[in-house]
Length: 328
Image 1 (cartoon, rainbow, N blue to C red):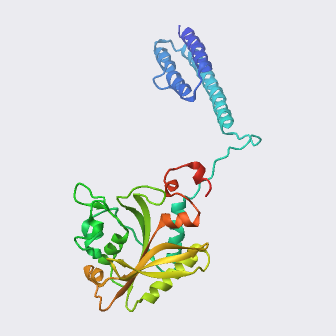
Image 2 (cartoon, rainbow, N blue to C red):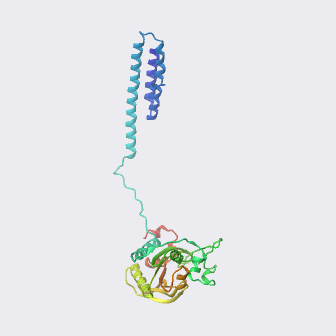
Image 3 (cartoon, helix red, strand yellow):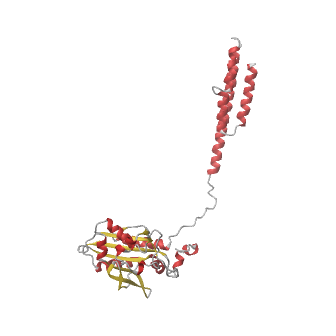
């Protein structure tokens, strides 16, 4: 009886092992047939009913069956492992004769490249890059910068006000106030960032644009220091020494103030505004204007990008046209 069961178990196990197609399935078969609670162990429990004369032959037959199952398991395991390796090699093998896949190289956007170029110049002059929030309060955007309560820039037609009473900053001068309020002089910072104005969009104007402003506060700074810094910046920015002129102007946060023009390709272009920091601004941040003076200037990034790259319309910088961007 046991001989028949062992022979049937062997045939059944070999058939199942041959049909297995995964290592996990093969391991399950090993446990099912050869484990402590496997089918071979269950068959051998019947040996206790055998006579002493029958037990040796049944034991020997059981060992033969066990070895046969183990041999088939091991052979099948090697076959499956080899097949797995070959499948992995087939997937990972590179055909070096195939043509390569070309990925288009990225381009620096003219706005980004202009900002990077300006920041490199100011960092080389010893300035630290500073940033601030784009949503601002009236205090940082106007009051601390010496804007009078009835100044036209506060009007709704110029400033984008938010329902909570805050506003979208109209210039990056807000960064200067925040930085000075938290740091003692001497300071030298350059502040790049996006600003917002309620403006009609056309070829030279945008409601959203970018500015870069620099500020230095120390003892003994004069308008001569301001002119020298501006001239060095413009020379590095345009790559050559160009005629520069300063025209008297007015800004609430600087006194005296000036507009800066540069002669580029035979034409005078207005490129930035500048001036000595107004004493009221220094007082607002806790600086003593009798001890410290400051120089500051600001420029529109888009204006420089249009001039330096000879772009005819500011809207081209914002419409994400790849035909345009791939030129840079």
